[in-house]
Length: 281
Image 1 (tube, rainbow, N blue to C red):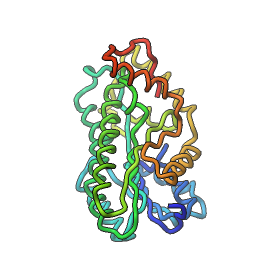
Image 2: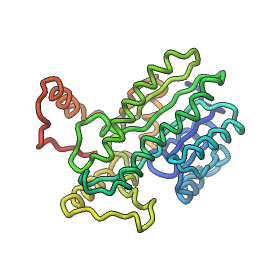
Image 3: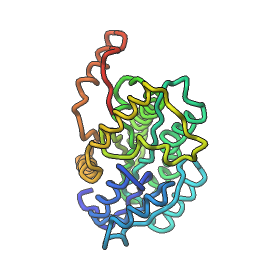
């Protein structure tokens, strides 16, 4: 996909963070971009940031937890554009804290957004992608947290991201059996300056949860590191470079690889997890 001008790109979670960077980069390449999010104010800010290129962007209010709504979204995209060349299943939220203390409703929320949101996207878009004449790539956003061992207070988030990694590996192999030129990549970001550590901003006050002192200190420390992370626009350029190179594993920041190797060694040698190993993502 060396020439993206005029091609069609769909991005969920487009209203902020990584999604907003992907939108701006795709528009900069001359793509027709459809950005979906529950955050309508965020979508409006993204639209404004596009300046004179805003005509290449269509904002769409979408809750990826709603399978029927995702189906209607896919129908609308194909009715308007006929084809999709890049599909970024990118919408994501973060819940942290002790696994047994977070309400089950919070577990359901993060699973429904981070995992079921992608499954809904695959269910409604893949048949259409396979039926179109043009080639296409699906990019599912996971995290380096989907590769590393479980981090303290990170069970909810990492459980969903490990699932996304495994799902996308299977998807890649399944698509290879089809005649159509449709493939998949998994995107595993490290620290990118997003608002994911403030995901509760998207929920009403009645759904807010108070972390314990230790968990809140962890949350604030990691949120600060993330806020100082990679710029979403420069990160998006790296993502598109990975797509251009045909990579399945799109991992722009590989500084965590020694930790991943340690985890692999622990598994191979059946060693217990190292309680002293820091996990920061």
